Image 1 (cartoon, rainbow, N blue to C red):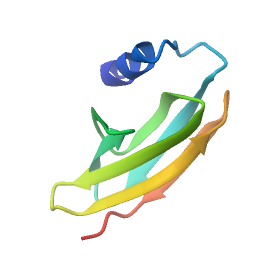
Image 2: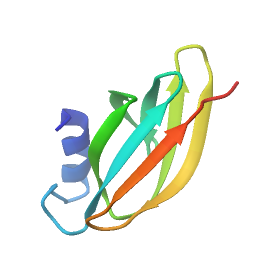
Image 3: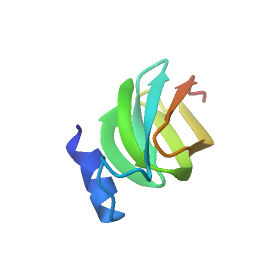
Image 4: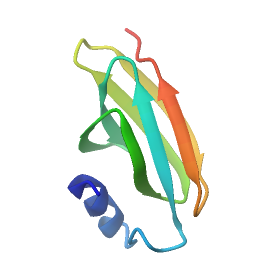
Length: 89
């Protein structure tokens, strides 16, 4: 599991094994940096099975060529949410 993801969970008082956690699969074309709820995760798409707290989140993807994508999404506890985005200028 990515260190930045674990840090995000621990900061919110959660561990990956808790039932209040779901998962995020995110892909993009082109690959992009992942900003989750305003926090730079230091991760780049594609990513699979990232643990996130259940509930609503805001995702921003920042591609190297200045394209970006933003979306709000909801993760259910114990479930995986899959997002595939195409950043635009």
